[in-house]
Structures are given as structure tokens and as C-alpha cells.
Image 1: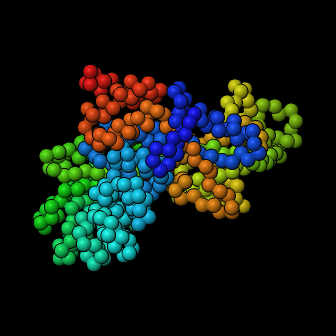
Image 2 (image 1 turned 180 degrees about the vertical axis):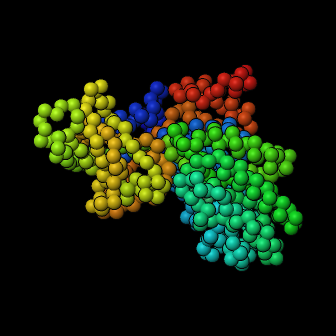
Image 3 (image 1 turned 45 degrees about the vertical axis):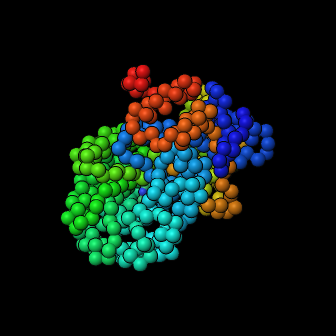
Length: 460
Ligand SMILES: *Cc1c(COP(=O)(O)O)cnc(C)c1O
């Protein structure tokens, strides 16, 4: 293994035949030799690239603007910038980060409907024009502070079936939209389109259909008032893992026909989205170490010595990352995190009811209330997969517990493909992305499940 520093971040090339999971093993072995045994992440940037190809294939009309708040690590943002995505930034710092990587302001949407005046000025001074709004006060601020904003009206959606609701805080109700558009006209502002967010962790694909229909309605209002409405932003809410309650392909199966119905290709409307967790959730694996353990004997079984085979105890494991660190997703993102074992249990291994706790002194710091695990020891490892979304981005060092190191990895074929896409631009048409996929096969990529047969046939 050697380390390459191609741009602003470091990652390790995966040698042929090695997966990110092998690096997890390797790091565990290295760390087990020492006394440290700190928690750590392995992030597979090739997984981010795979997600992008999956997006391009499933939503060929929709340009993704990655929501930086979901995970603002330089490595992820740089990889996505190379792949040609746009970016949803909510603050001056996020705009700075993305622009520091050379991303053109036209690839940024300032998608925060309630912005601080000084940050609107910052966006104006740095060429960021697209920004969302959902109130009259915001329009007046923008009229004062930005010379040529291209405004996008964020509308409320029915997010009652989303895990994290957003429309309680943001989005104008439909009946307020005409008034807002009229006010924008009076202020001499330029409204170019409509955005919405169905809520993060969306569980009902019909939320998208309804929101797209509502957006169409607002487009008509805008057109009547003389605006050149040409941008639809369908927000985020797309799952980042395959075992989500509502699958990505179940959403796209509904979104594509709705787009074709309300915003047909010949309408000339540009369609973008703001996926966050879709891109990063599955790329990150978190590995934690058991630092303490308690055995709680069950009183009834303890007195009954003959009771064999049934568990007579509950185990409490304490690990070195918790809800004030990476597992803040449990509090903020309503996540349910379950570990996988590092060492495979024996077939007849006794499982015990367990709870898993973080390292801080706060009683709230509990990762798992109840799960079944074997009798593990202090120094053993637990692995949490799918830990890339809303984890590192919002973690603290409360109580003095440091954030885990992140080891970035990518296979050589993945890296070559990112470079290729970078130099040839956004692979928008489906045919083009298939070409990339075939070249990945030629590059002996170990993981081929992305290359679907119809695509190969068409290329040949
Ligand atoms: C958080 C957020 C997103 C990303 O949402 P996901 O569900 O992670 O895709 C997109 N747009 C806006 C405006 C957001 O606030």
C-alpha cells in the first residue's frame, strides 16, 4: 500500500483484490498491537464515486448538488467536485470550503432560506447567485445586499412521513407563494425557480410527486408575473443505504415520471437536487473498541444454578465513541445504529442481551439500548457500518473525547475513473456513464455489481 496526495487530501490506494473491509481488518490488527485502540473510521471514496454513477443512471435529468452539511470532509467534497456535482451550501464557511477547491460559483446553490445579512453579502462578493428564500423579510434582505441574486422559492411539503421533518422550519405554504412572487417583482428581484425538501429520511415516495406538482403550480404563478422560471430543485431525502425503508430506486421510479409529466424535457427547465446522505452514508465504517464492561446478574436465574442454556445476565459494554461524538446521529438524525462483530461468533456461541454506551460521563450517552451480542472482553472491537451521514459533521469533543481518525481509501480503477470524469466533464447522458462503467471493468475493478447488462450491450 502506498499513499497518494493528488490534491488536498490523502488517501491510500487499495491494492488489487483488497476492499475497504480489508483495511478495517488491517487497522484493527495494527491497533491491537498497541495500547491505544482508539476508535477510527475507514472511508471508501470509491463508494462515493459508485453512488454518483448510480445517481446519473437513475436520475439522468437531475443534476446533484451535494448537501455539504451532511459530511463536509475535504476528501468527500473534493471527490464530488472532481465528479462534477454541484453543491448545496448553507453558510459562508461551506461556500468557502467548496470555492477553495476551485468549484465555479455557478455550481453552488446557497440553499438556506434564512441567511445572515453579512453572509448574503459574502455570497454576492464571491459570485454565488442562486439562493433560496421562503419569506418576505428574506426578499428585502437580498434586495439590499445582493446585486444579482437568482432566487429560488422554497415551498413547504408534506413531510409527515419523513424521519427528520424540515417543513416545520422552512418552506412557504402554497397559498403564500403568489404574494411572495409579487413582492419579489416589486423589489426588482429575479426569481428563477422553486425548491423543496420532502424531509430527510423520507419514507413515502408520493411526497415527491405532490411536491413536484405543487412546484409546477408555482412555476405558472411565476410565469404569469413575468419571471423566467427555469430551475426546479427537488431537494434531498434520498436514502444512503440499501436496506432503507424506502429504496432509492423506489423513489426514482416515482420521481422520473412526475418530472416528465410536470416538467417535460422540452420545457427547458433545468432540474437539480440536493442529496446529502445518499452520497456518503455507506462510504464510512466506524470501528470502536470496548473500554469497559459490566455484568448484571439476573436475580431469578442466578439463584437457579441448574438453569443451563438460557442467559442469566445482561451485559453493558462501554466503547470509545458515543452520542457526543460520531453517534450524535442517534440524537439529531434519529438513527438506529447496530454493530457487527469483528470476530465471527462460533455457531453455538451464547448470546446475551446487551446495551452499548459511549465513553462520556453523561447518562444520555447510550448507543444501543438492547441488542444481542456474545460475551466480549475489554479490548475487543465492534464495527458500525453506514456511518458517513450526519456523524463526523456534527460531532463534538465533549468531555475530552477526541474524534476518531479517518482513513480514506480508494481503488486504483476508481481513482482513474474519477480523473477521467473530471477531465471529460459531467457524465450526464446514460450512454456515457455506461462507457465509464465498461472502462472500469477493463480496469479490473473488483466490484462489478454496477455494470448492468443492457448498458454493456449498448456500448458494444
Ligand atoms: C439537509 C438538507 C439536504 C440534504 O438532505 P438529505 O436527506 O441528507 O439528502 C438538502 N437540502 C437542504 C436544504 C437541506 O437542509
